[in-house]
Length: 203
Image (cartoon, rainbow, N blue to C red; front, side):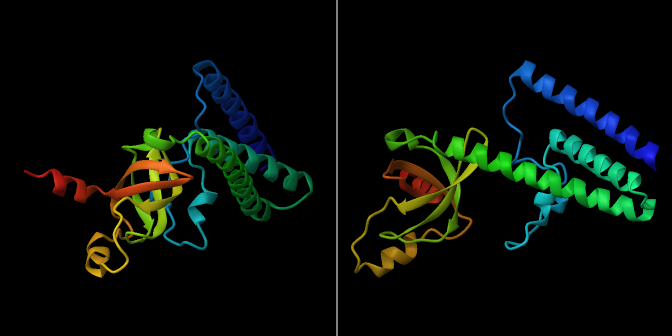
């Protein structure tokens, strides 16, 4: 197994280096965190997102293989048998992949979040609701910008008096409903349901 791990380490390191060089030459800055190589493994659990332990791009896959082979080599050098070193190597690769992905994701999201359109420039951003809210309330939506999703605080663009309960119920934005932003103010994005826009412009 020592030579197997060594072969994987050399192969994955070479491929990983070539991938980084190609990214530098092509000026590719995104690591494609929205796309997944293993989409079928996407976890539906909100508490334990197991899918985040799997590589989400080719670069992360090469990194995971490189980390796993390096971990396996260390265990082999320590004198452990293959049936113990192999699962430990796989676990080590997944953990390192998870740590790197989450670190890069947070850095990228923080940078991109600060560059989201503000004010009237935010008009036209589409997305969907993740936390239901009614007119006069606020919730959370995820908006799409430059092929990425960003969770932001949102306010219903339709303002209604507090006593119009019927309006509140009919205009409530439910979880999963498609929305579109009208403008942004003080960190809040004013949004309406997409179906309401089409309903209002219908002849």
